[in-house]
Image (cartoon, rainbow, N blue to C red; front, side):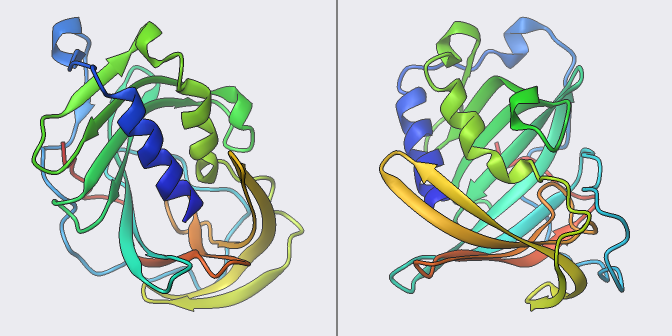
Length: 232
């Protein structure tokens, strides 16, 4: 999956010599306790898509997707909203099994969920299995900020009103009236066209399923509006 691979590569580059700074800055941080997302049943999806806007972000929201690779293998990836600093949200992405994978957390402002250019990344954290958490802010983030923003593209969804709608069944349930759209993704020399199905009852990205021409894709396994806890 292009998103997962490129995001992890960027994180490895960015965090080679970073140090944790959040506590030293003395800034107020709202955060959930350090732990993995608790396993729980997904809420009953809306009988149909109500409106064409993503849910507002809120601490505690989470999603878990299966990631299908071109070679037929699969893994998991979770998105979680685990805290705030001022008007910015800590969005945590965990690849692999909950509690034992690679974790990347970005402090991001989201002024307009339809326009990636309206966002800014203020800080980044990363933890590899068996290693200490690292954090970078300010000038240390400048070299990779734009690339991180590009890799957070799923956080931004164009106006859905008027797009084709169809029912989609995934492990998390049946979602009626998902909005379907196609996107072209360019990450380095890799170019891909992907079809995405979005439902407003799903938090954070709204993503129910994605499928690229090369066979890669995502499917929603479970989600919740509360209960997300940081893995850092």
